[in-house]
Image (cartoon, rainbow, N blue to C red):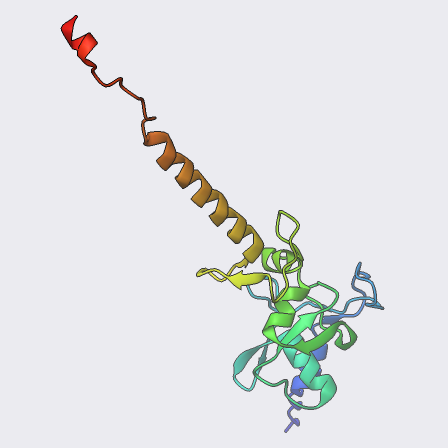
Length: 177
């Protein structure tokens, strides 16, 4: 009876889906070609790998495989090369979700990079407050807008008051006439 072929290990199955001849990243400080995941991907372009009866992000599994320990659930794996299909360990880093978002080029990261309000006042601890929707607002601009609003209201109140006119008081000579 022929001997059955042994099942490949997860690491061997993972390696079968890696193309080490990917593009060079356009990001400074990220060296070497990207290793492209050629297996299944999700709708956003991130690699998916079946391991322990569940789908795992291929880039997350690559970090766990290289480091020999799982990535903490509280951390995201960031693609420093900005290539979602890349699984090269030197292009990946475990960071908090906030760091991951701010490292990208999305609208949240662009807005967080702004250091001053449109009028040029700095967004620092003393001059910044958070609006109800979570956006940063400038205290100096708010103070100036409040002053301008109050001044306009005062001007409006004064404009509605009719100017005083003096009417001559009747004198006996005028009454006789």
